[in-house]
Every structure is written in C-alpha cells, then in structure tokens.
Image (cartoon, rainbow, N blue to C red; front, side, top):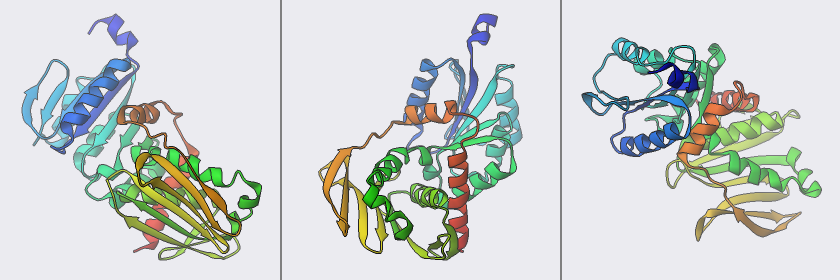
Length: 298
C-alpha cells in the first residue's frame, strides 16, 4: 500500500457474514460500496476456510476469535477509523466482540440474526455501556415508514388525537423492525412500559401494543394507531409493494391516499449507517425503549 493510497482512505471497513444463502449477495453489495467510497474493505466469509484473495476477502470459518482479530488487525491502515459491519447470527459470538474492539463504529442488521429480539437487547446493552457508535439497518429501514405515519399528524385536527392513542399494531416480516417502530413512538410520545404488551402515557392511560410477525423478512406490512375515536392505518398497497396507503376511519376520518414508499437498498443503508453523526439521540432513545418493551414481556 503506497502512502498516496493510504492517505486517500477514509475508513477501514470490516464485514463479517456467515449465512450461506446471503453471503454472495452481501459480498457483491459490499464490493459496490467499497468501489464507491475510499475505504480499506475487508470481507470475512465465515462459510469457508483457508482462502485469501488479493481483494482482501478471507475465508474464516473455524478461525478462533483471537486469531481472527489479529489477522484483521494486520490488514488495517493505521491512522484512519475502523468500522465493523456484522452480518453474523449472534451478537454474543466472541468473534463479534473481537472484531468490534478494532473500531469505534458497529453496524448490525438485527433482523438477519438468529434471534432478532436477543440481538436488539444486546445492541442496547452495547450502546449504553460503551463509547462505540452503534447502528442497526433494521432501524434505518423504518425511516420511510416513520415519515409516512408522521404525515397523519400534519393535519391539525388529527394531531389532537395523538394524546388519545390507545393502541399500536405493527405487522412485519421480522421482529426488530416492529419493536423499533413501537420504541420510536414511545420515545417520541413519552410513553413507558407499564405491563406486558402495554405502555402508559404521562396521564397514566394505557396503550396496548400488538406485534405480529407476517410477510417477508425485513419488510413492514402495516402500522395501525387506534385512538378512542378513530384508527390511523398505513399499509402496503395490495397490488404494489412500493406504495403505502394512508387511511383514517372513525371520527374524524380521511379518504384513502397512497404515496411511494421510498425504500432503500442495502448499500444505501450502509452508507447512512457509516456517515451519519457519531451519536444519533433519536436512535439511541428508540433502541433503549425497544429494549425496555422487550424486558416488559418477560
């Protein structure tokens, strides 16, 4: 590595993947990201062993955590930051901690984990106990849905129903997205877990939470907010996965209207995760609230 090449590198980016079904796709998209940005990219394929390419793609199946850390450390460019994109099954894997210790930014995709709920809670623990900057692609996927649902309450009359919300229903193909959405609402509206599947507002009113897992992984199908007088529904159009339709029924009510869902691909999500400010307080509060909701279910 020449000095000029080293000086143009903005970050060491380490990616770890171990699902045979997704490794080829992740490798291709990781390569796209590396070509687009000035980064030292190291792809760790935990589905094979004993192979290393000139493009810094390593087969690391069966490699112990300490050796994995040492091997990757020797490939890093000094003087620039390092980040880990973890697409492993478990955040309690000793290889995760070994690789995460090499940098200050950790990007995960909790909806790809073997246990999405456990992944959320482990990520909340990491976020609260270390100075590492943590990101979750499962949360970033929700940003278009957050924008769509927030549009309901741009209407002054509908905004009056916010303090009267009594129920939240989320249907998604993976659990992390649903818990993040519930956590985001709770953190923004100052709700706190008060019983299993229940949140309470500042006045002590109960908001029931119903999360249903259905549909394709990493996709939200619908969000429903119910007040005492009406229901706010945001759902994917039955004939197009790229449209979200908003409906308000009851009193007041609003006619159905649909708008494009500005969904983003994996490369764009990783870009967002890598280049947002070091600390995102909304995400941090959402993550801790999602973990608190999970704790209340025990």
